[in-house]
Length: 93
Image 1 (cartoon, rainbow, N blue to C red):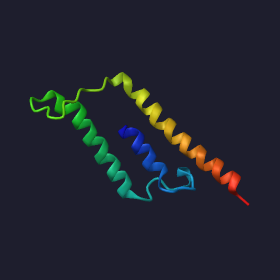
Image 2: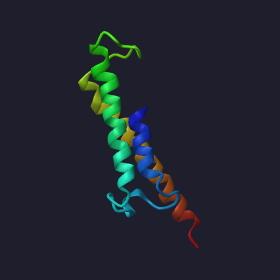
Image 3: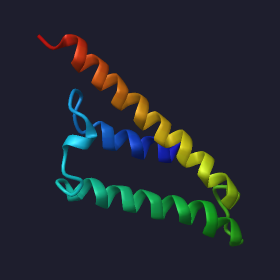
Image 4: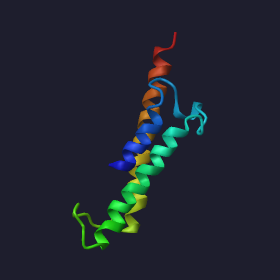
């Protein structure tokens, strides 16, 4: 879910304009937030279960599942970008 939200964040910078029309480094705060989110998620999923204080009761995600996670996250990104393109194309005057 976190990866889907990260990809959504990238597309949500504009409701009508494609994410590809923006400079990827135009908003450094977004990238800082993405990095903090990913590092936090990796700590929660991979570090905390290996301690005796596993308060969140998490378990590591197998590494061979990450391609599937990224596929679904990127799929959501593509669907939103297609929706923007279709909306812009059919509402243009």
